[in-house]
Image (cartoon, rainbow, N blue to C red; front, side, top):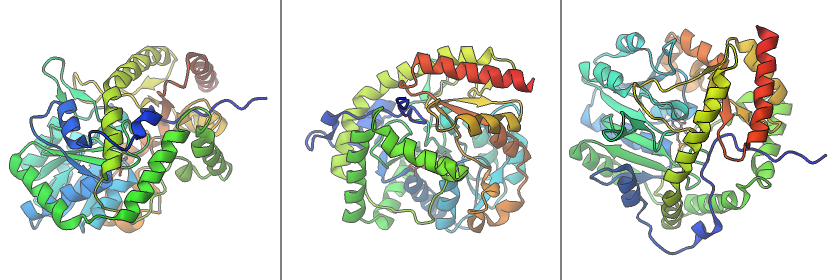
Length: 414
Ligand SMILES: *Cc1c(COP(=O)(O)O)cnc(C)c1O
């Protein structure tokens, strides 16, 4: 029997061979600023994590004496590694019960004169309530760094008065990593509302980020390989086969790609990869519009299944992006059973992150005080979330199969 083609876990914008031409516009910072509708430049870094490190080091110079960074307890482990690399202490904020976002009361309890920054996070493209985080942070003199790693293209507010997610906080960053939408294999983008903060971000980058021909060569080869393999046939080699190996070992942390190393490379984003990004960016808006339409249709079908909740934006009147459709199941046992049966079989199921940061074990050395922060609600989310790929390659036929699987699971557990 033919193996079903591998579906990527998220709706990444596929590259075309023509994107790889080594000439043309390399002003990705200018193009992105234009794309976002910003009146000023954005700043490019080699990854979202590196962008976050530049942001945190900058804020340390602006507010010396402050040492704590507050992030949601359920987020990318790279955030914890970045905070530790900057010599800062992470504090973990529990989540709301009714939305995938920091709990306002828990956030107030964590904010103090020690707080340097609060990181509202648009997980999986679902827009967080940044205004609430600004309120809590500014009340104690702290900054807001908006983690829009997974939300380039998401919007606050209705048209035509909408604003891009990532630009409401004092500083915001996006990731151009594989799987997050637009990609240069790895890449990061920094924005700031205030001109003086933008100047300070540039100064930090100039002082701390050094060119690395080795890392740039490595990322360029990886980007070319990605462009070659990011198609239904190639993905088995690049993603499907390693995933099946991780799952055969019951290693969900590796399967979800949550197994990060401590070392975070920092170097500029090279010219060729910026050119590739410029060309792909021209297709991003249309691609995201199509993905949003698909997500809307499929969300309605999913929401009709008893017990299934399609996770919505936490911020009122927001329009998030749709790399995946996120579901919250009634019980974690049912969620785990679905993953054991169908993760890696081409149904398009995966996990955003496996655990709250304190439950991995492998990140304990960077958690410090955060290990004692209450995270019960976030842990409940972590146990019940399920992501469905919103890639166009998960076609209607396969999605119908997935609906059947989910309906059977709902019947079995009701
Ligand atoms: C991926 C991610 C990051 C880090 O971005 P990279 O570009 O992979 O370094 C930070 N925060 C969140 C929420 C992410 O998903």
